[in-house]
Image (cartoon, rainbow, N blue to C red):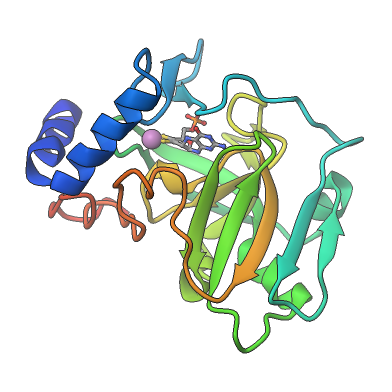
Amino acid sequence: MLGTVGLGAAALVASPWLRRGLEAGLGAAADKDPTGFTGLLPNGGGFRYYSVAASVPERGPADYRLTVDGLVERPATYDLDALRRMPQSRVVRDVQCVTGWRVPGTPFEGVPVARLLDAAGVRPEGRAIRFSCFDGTYTESLTLPQARREDVMVALRMQDRPLSHSHGGPARLYVAPMYFYKSAKWLSGITVTGDVEPGYWERLGYDVDAWVGRSNGRDDAPTV
Ligand SMILES: Nc1nc2c(c(=O)[nH]1)N[C@H]1C(S)=C(S)[C@@H](COP(=O)(O)O)O[C@H]1N2
Ligand SMILES: [Mo]
């Protein structure tokens, strides 16, 4: 298996798109890693803390809300209790950041995005999803078939604990088969759209279809 540093360096050399993204990211935040790395989490078990927003308000059971809207029959707003009452699924995979670091065998639990889309009733013209965040800045996107995968969820728990604020709690998107930048933290909105609208890092050159091992200039075997 390639070392994580080697993976990052290979991608940097291989992909002009990625290089452009890195340069743009560096311009936007010269004191940070290009994907928003601001420091190792204490006791983070290998996780790094990423946020492109300087500060993010804390939200909990009293004031957290997730809206599902856009091209749907029945727009809805969920609070944390409502999400917790829905059937939860559990996925255990390696977390893989596009810059190379990895956290093996990490359990995530939450509500599959497919369940929320079914509840809302996607209209025939709905083809993609835009995810938004209460940090006010970050966005992500998936095609409808990607969002409907069983390993794509609104995660409420990670490593058998409620998701902490620094990891995007109380609820983040978790897209198991893709690089971790797809897993938008502090999730506040799921909007069904007609076309894919590239997310925050994707406008800076990262791949929209961010399959682990098969995107961003990599052709190594998938790790999931
Ligand atoms: N809202 C938001 N979500 C985000 C990011 C971010 O900056 N803001 N960074 C992404 C990137 S690049 C990674 S690697 C992971 C990091 O998650 P962690 O902070 O829980 O380790 O979050 C992803 N989701
Ligand atoms: Mo990342």
